[in-house]
Length: 121
Image (cartoon, rainbow, N blue to C red):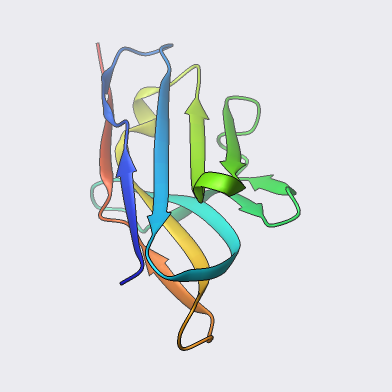
């Protein structure tokens, strides 16, 4: 069974940094792209950053210049380095990936369980 497992959330003061990790495991044929979303209380889930298989990245305007998404293809892992964190970055962060399993070889979207990030003094 393909699954995504996130780690790295926690409590940090404003201006601080955190690094989130998301590892994909299971019978994977290939991964097209991996993304980070977040959902704050009472708000809709929003895209934070995405990295495609060729390495191209894209970010939400609210995190540009502060967050960096990167990937390790050998480990099927994506990272989100978050710097200069603000209270409005507080949310549950979810990993998302478009994966082609070994069988059936049909692209499917997978989600992680989410990790809480709280920015507060």
